[in-house]
Image 1 (cartoon, rainbow, N blue to C red):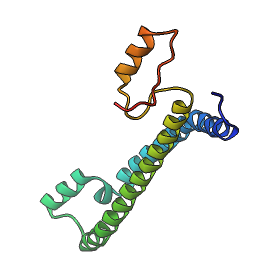
Image 2 (image 1 turned 120 degrees about the vertical axis):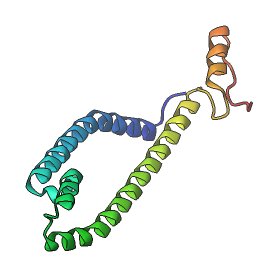
Image 3 (image 1 turned 30 degrees about the horizontal axis):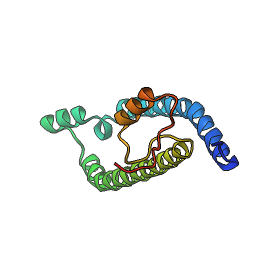
Image 4 (image 1 turned 60 degrees about the horizontal axis):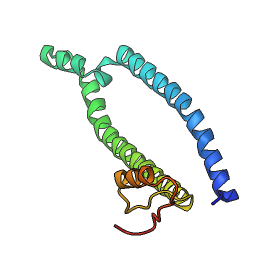
Length: 138
C-alpha cells in the first residue's frame, strides 16, 4: 500500500524537524550553560548554593539579600512547576506523533499494537514468500 499525500507531508515535516532539532538543542544548551556560569560569577548568593552556605556560616549575608532570596524562592518554585508541565505537554505531543507513525506502519503491512515484535520478526523470517496477516490480535 502506498502512502497518502497527507502521510508524505507529515513524514517530510518530521524529517526536517529531526535535522534541525539537534542544532537548536545544542545552541540552547550552550546558551543556558553560559548564562548559568555568568550568573554564578555575578550573583553567587542567588545561583551558587555553596556560596550561600559559606556566607550563612560566616554571617556575611546582608539582610536585604535574605529578603530578596526569600521573595524569589516561591517564584522559582512556580516557574519550575510550569517548566515541568511544559515538558509533560511536549511528551504527550511526542506520543501522539508516535501513534501516527505506528498507524502509517500498520497501513504499510507492519505489526499491530498487539503483535509482539519478536513474533513479528520470527514470522517474517520464517515465511518470507508468504505475507502474514498482522491484523489479528494476540
